[in-house]
Length: 187
Image 1 (cartoon, helix red, strand yellow):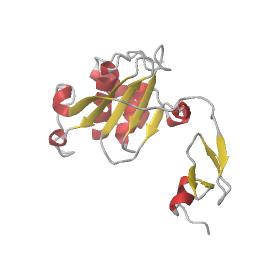
Image 2 (cartoon, rainbow, N blue to C red):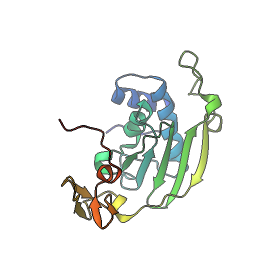
Image 3 (cartoon, one colour):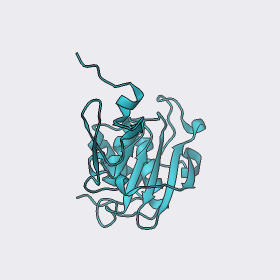
Image 4 (cartoon, helix red, strand yellow):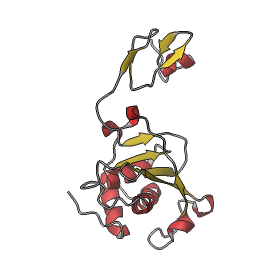
């Protein structure tokens, strides 16, 4: 496992770029975002000693998320990364041990075109990002580990884990059945 130096942007950028396959604008942003967020919540060894202390909430499903994943070691499959695709260049870093959380979001004025990006190695965090201490409310069902409960959707029969079900007119439903929508169509 590679040694993390959260003060060495070029080294962190290489790790993120290798994971993603290239170094694009989103990888540059995500690298700085991860470096900033981790330092602010006191996580210095996210893939080693601190790996069970960290949960990250990302707000976009683009390259930035790959950089954060590469540098933090957090993944959806380990339940240490939650992806909310709001289309925002933002992530919240949460230290489970100290309960400290910080949301790091790209400032619109610093989001220059791909042809003229800022030099991410020298621009100050506060110039690139809006950084706020925030509170994150986590239920036991949101934490890493085995599922705590399972329910069956009475309409489609799917297994719904960890409190993601919805009760509608005394019927237990998955969220798509409750909303009457799906991202796929049965043929």
